[in-house]
Image (cartoon, rainbow, N blue to C red; front, top):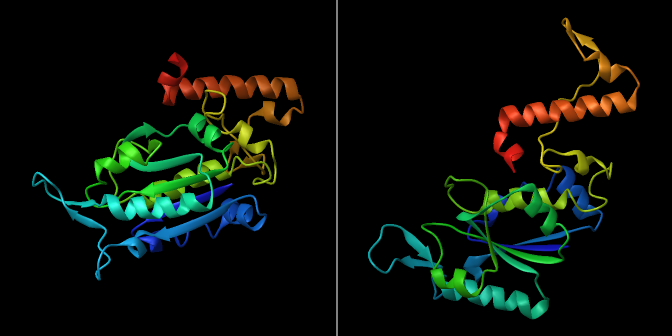
Length: 225
């Protein structure tokens, strides 16, 4: 898999891909992540990538021409399965979306900034728009890192235990049940006896019941679906 990220603030992405699971996946050759500074495609001597909005609205808008040029250059080198714009009003990111994207080969992530991007980019260049929630942040860089992480950890070999991702919250339509580790008792707080029983069937039933209870408490709409 290859992910190309287009941004006007590449420095914001210096850290997220140098540690933990994503870094190990890169080292193993499971994924390539390339961050591109849109200002290298900026117009004129000042490398301009934004301009005032037609209609007089407040805030600057990312221009169509620099974005078109960098995406065109990337597409000359390889085919892309998706060009994803990280947008507050895109489809809300879910585990199912991450599952779908983890099966793809090459993707472009376009990070918005300022007031947004010229609508013609969305109409003619972007193939999918994804939001990480109904709120606004300063740009698409942190959402892009979040999306990449959610996808990469699903690639076979990225996790040391290949079955771990299958038991994550939301994979089966439920949030994950409570988990415990040693010691069996600390400060008078005990691990449920069932988890110490050594009975796989009873443990599985307990985990399923707890997952349902926790989902009903914290994400009731998931059970409605």
